[in-house]
Amino acid sequence: MPFKTLDDVEYAGKRIIMRADMNCSVDSETKEITDSSRIEAILPTLEDLSKSTVVLMAHQGRPGSDDFISLRPHTEILQKHGIRASFVDDIFGDEAKSSIKDLELGEVLVLQNVRYFDGELKKAPVEEVAKEPLVQELYPLFDLFVNDAFGAAHRSQASLVGFTPYLPSVAGRLMEKEIRTLTKAVGTEKHPWTLVLGGAKVEDKVKTLEKLLKTGRVDHALLGGLVATALLVSSGEIDEKYSKPISGFDSIRDSARMLLEEYADSIVLPIDAAVERDGSRVDCSFDEMNEDPFYDIGTRTIQAFKEIVEGSAVVFANGPMGLFEKEPFALGTEKILRAIATVDGVTVVGGGHLGAMAREMKLENKVSHISTGGGSTINFLTGKKLEVVQALEKAAERMEKK
Ligand code: 3PG
Image 1: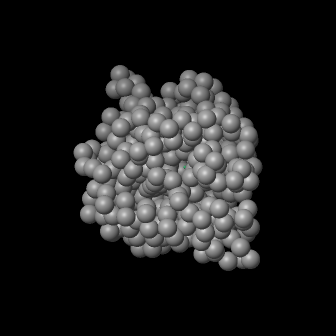
Image 2: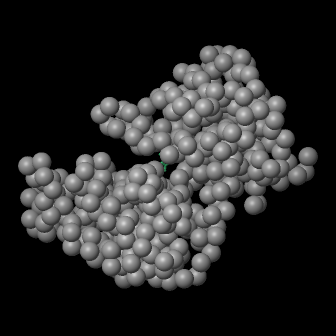
Image 3: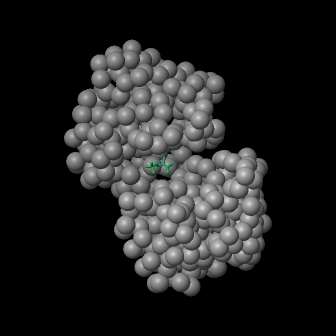
């Protein structure tokens, strides 16, 4: 590993500030966490740190999104797993500092959602985000920074990289495991190499798709979810009425059109749709969509995608094919996951939602790896060093020099 891990430092008895990715799926109405696997994934690190004091920073959702909620429920889940965790509704103010000072060995204090602080939303080089008060107020209270937020490792934000110039900084157990496993999976030269890309966060995904196609590694890019909708609208395949997910993002349309032109041989778009009509799933051609909500890939697309997946040697999948939260529209995602599970090769399923679904379908032993990363995993595949990894590497150099 090019960075330091917990094996390289003394952590027992130390005051540790840890960044995790506990960004979970949340029910948009009840606001309850529907899948806690990202919380469970950091338990090995917390167990190793059970003789230290640990302050945990994490984000949940983005401002304005349905899942932008407090980290109190996350703390309760940690407690259910036997972690002596408490929560403070503050990030770096007096209340947080006083709770940090009162913390005893073996205890974990969860700070409020770091994205409640505007300065955390800034994405900038390490030196710049390190000036944010979140970092400046907190770093003097700690001996060590542990980064276990693999899911957010492609983000250069204050809580993720800002502590590294000030504190000895190491990767947690999950970060270490993800990087090790993905490095091995990416190392394969086998083909056909298939990407299955769905879900939301369209702007991010179109950009990463472009980077990934440029590597020349991808034989087939099967697109579903809102990413597919964006490309279908941009190419005029479906009505402008479906452009809501990309409204205001004109650059997405330009990128989408460019991608469809340049990578016509690799990009595979849906050929039909499943819409919601009178409360039911109706599979139809694009001409018959009738402006009804487009919630999943249609049955002909499912069949076409399945055949490509089954003939692949390598499959990386990220993001659901449709609105899987509504049962009839989980069909596309389920069928594609089942097809991935039959592949005798390298298969990596990533992203909060898709990973959760793969676990629910008990596919853990049928795919090579279920990654906690969505965007971070796809960014990893582009070959670019993830921002958090770069920061940890620099920190390792500093630690060597001391
Ligand atoms: C994710 O879910 O991919 C990570 O938690 C990062 O979230 P973000 O895309 O909102 O930065």
